[in-house]
Image 1 (cartoon, helix red, strand yellow):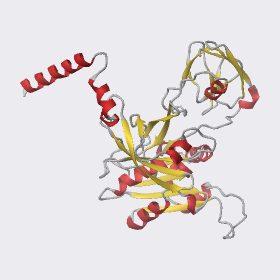
Image 2 (cartoon, rainbow, N blue to C red; image 1 turned 90 degrees about the horizontal axis):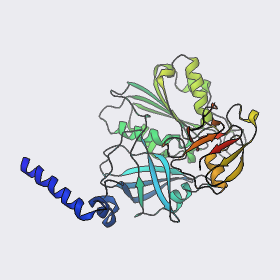
Image 3 (tube, rainbow, N blue to C red; image 1 turned 135 degrees about the vertical axis):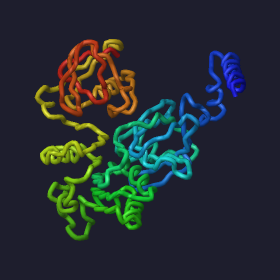
Image 4 (tube, helix red, strand yellow; image 1 turned 90 degrees about the vertical axis):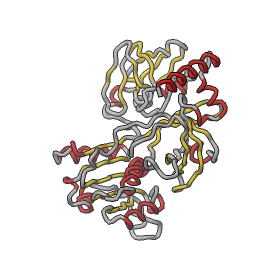
Length: 370
C-alpha cells in the first residue's frame, strides 16, 4: 500500500514536469471540460420550461463538482459573444439525485444580458462553468419538527431544493409552504408542488395569487399582496415554526419587521436575491460624480444606480461576478469619497477601501481606482 502511494506521487510529479508550464488537469480540460477539477464545469443535459418566463436547466456536473446542501446557491459562468459572464442561481435539485444531475431555474429578466441567454438560447450540450455551492439558507441538523416556508415569485427556487430533499426522506417534518404569485400559471414548479402536497400528508401548500384571472372572480381588482393578517389566517401557529423566507425585497422587509415585532426574529431565515433600488435617504444626497482614475473616464451617478452599472455605461472595464453582492468579485479600490450600500442604505468608505461596486452607489463625488 505504501509503495503504491509512493509510485502514484512519483507519476503525478512526472506528469507535471512533462506538461510544464501547464498541469495535467489543463490537458484533461481541453479533451473534455467535465474532466477538469481545477475549473469545474457542467454540461446541460436538458431544458425544461416551468412558466412563461422561468426555465430549468438540468446540468451534469464534471469531476470538480463537490456537491451541495439543500438551499445552496452557486455561481454559473456562461460565455456570450466571447465574454464569460457569471451569475448566481439557487440549486433547485436535491443532493444526490438518482440521475446525478444538478438543476438551476432561471427567470428571464426584461433587458437582462445573461438570463435571456440561459433561459431562451441554451441548448442541451452547452457547457457552463460552475462555482462551488455555498450559502447559509439551509436547514440545520436535526431538521426542526415544524417548518414554515414563505416564498414569492422566483423566491421558490432555493426552497424547491429543500422541499425535494425533504420529500426524499422517510419522515417529512410538519411543513407549511405559503407561496405568492400573480396567477396559478405563474407558480414556478406549480404542478410538482401540488403533487407533493397531495402525496405528502405532512406538507401543506397555500397558494396566494396577487392578480386574478381576467373574467374570473375578482377580475379587475387591484393586486393584493400577502399581508400579516392573511398569513395568520393561513398559518395560525406561524410563531411556533422555524421559518425560511425568500422573495422580493419588499416582502422580506415586511416579514423581518413582523417577526421582530413578535419577538421571534431568531426563528426567521432569509435569502435575498436583489437589493432595494431606492434605499432610504438616497434622494437626500442627490446625484454623484464618479471618476475612474486609471482610465480617466468620468460619469454622473444617480443615487440608486450601482457603481458597476455606472462604470460599464461609461465604457470602463469593470470586474464583475454574480452582480448581487454574494461572490465579492465586483470590487474596486476607493480613492476618494464615500459610497452607499444599496442593501442597507449605510454610507461608508475610506480611501483605500475595497468596495463592492454591484451593491454600492455614489454618495456624492467618488474616485475609483479603475
